Every structure is written in C-alpha cells, then in structure tokens.
Amino acid sequence: MHNQIMTVCPNCGTNVVDPTAQFCPSCGATLNAVSQPTMSSAPPPSQPAYGGYPPSGTSGMRGARPTGITILAILEVLGGLALLLGGAAITALGGLVGLGLGAAFGGILIIFGLLSFVVAFGLWTGKEWAWLVALILSGLGALFDLVSIVIGLGYGSILSLLIDVAIIYYLTRPHVRAYFGK
Image (cartoon, rainbow, N blue to C red):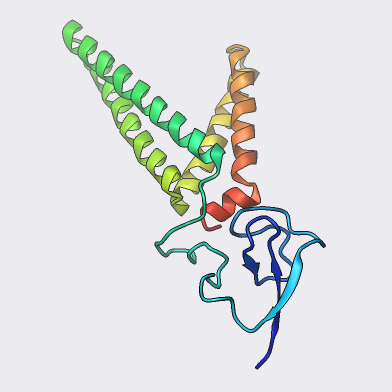
C-alpha cells in the first residue's frame, strides 16, 4: 500500500493531507517547518479525510466559527432590526399622512431587514452562499461609498469605504474561507 506524507498542525493536531498546504484547513494556523510529518496511508478514524470540514455542498459540523464572522453576523442582525423598525415607522407614517410612496419605501426596508436576518443566519452557521452574499454586499457597499465620495456626499463615506474594504479583506483570509468550505 502506498504511504502518503501528511503534516500535523502544530496548533490543533489535525493531519493535513495536502503536502503543499500553507494553512491548516481545520483551525487556519500557519503550517511551517516545525510541523511534524507523519507516515500514514489514511487519516486516523477520529480525523476526517477532508481536514475537519465537510466537503463542499454537504452538511455536518464545521470547525469553530471565526470571531470576526460572529461579529459580522451580530452586526447583520442589528442592521436588520434597524431596517425593520425604520421600515415599520416609515410605513406607518406614510399611511397616516396618505403617502403611498412612503409606505412602499417602508415596505422595501422591511424586506431588506428580513433578508438581513437570513444572511446573519448563513454567516452564523457557515453556509457557503452567505460568504458569497457578504462579499457581494461589501463590494457593492464599497462601490456606493466611492461614488458618494466622488460626488461629494460627505466624509462619512470614507469611513464606510474603509469598513467595506476591511470586511472584503477579512472574508478572503484562508481560515475564514475554510470555515465556509471554500
């Protein structure tokens, strides 16, 4: 039987099958020369062959959720609450003064608020689609911020742009991508 060289993660002890891997697929730790290679024809029964994460498109337990993803999910819930409350207030106010446009705008905000909860759930549970949605929303936010800066709508857009760029950078880190099965 052909033996395969595997690296053991110095942080969590996961057997890393890919000899060219630079990061542990389980915890995201950097793999370096200190890691101890072991000879094995297959991973031990307690360790899945795919490094602790289910293969893409399957369900099952994932590794620990990165702290930044927890923060993004909580912020998404808070933003959803703000959209729901604002949408309800605008809808009610539009109904009181007889402005159908206000009520329609409020309804749109309510829909976006509900969608925020769906995205927060996806981030919290490590759904692959949530990673892509968060990346797209941050990219669109950054584009909107750039346009706002160019047409002179205020300096608050600069801070918002920096936040969107930081989120995009964070979502593309190897341990975050691994959490989403990427």
